[in-house]
Image (cartoon, rainbow, N blue to C red; front, side):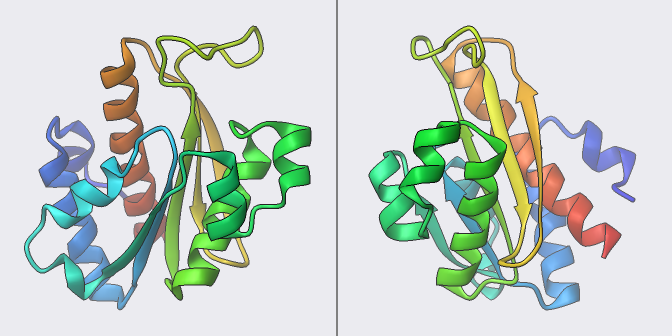
Length: 169
């Protein structure tokens, strides 16, 4: 179970440090597949000294073509579900783990704003997925605030999800 101290932590450093402890203890290599966060999760992870012990590769696949080319996300999947969807983030995390050889990853795709939203995917809609090449778990979030706030909240939830995944293992 994620400790309440970690969940209440306002700074990403506490979350990243806890994540690193868990990765080392379990021998896990991490990867990230990010779109709207632009590498924010990888940045938070690598802010911890010694993170090269458990983090080697991260992908910033901002464009749909990059999701397809680097992560193997089928373009038909993007066309039918949209980049901001459960199907796409699950394919992103599976592809990132497959391509990097990591045993655990996180993927994020969302509408950070201020534009780009729609009726079914308004600004602040973010899909996240955690898992590996075989098994994924995804969830949709709706974050309030401006572009920066949406991205920061996305990074925080991504880290918490990785911690929860590892603590449940």
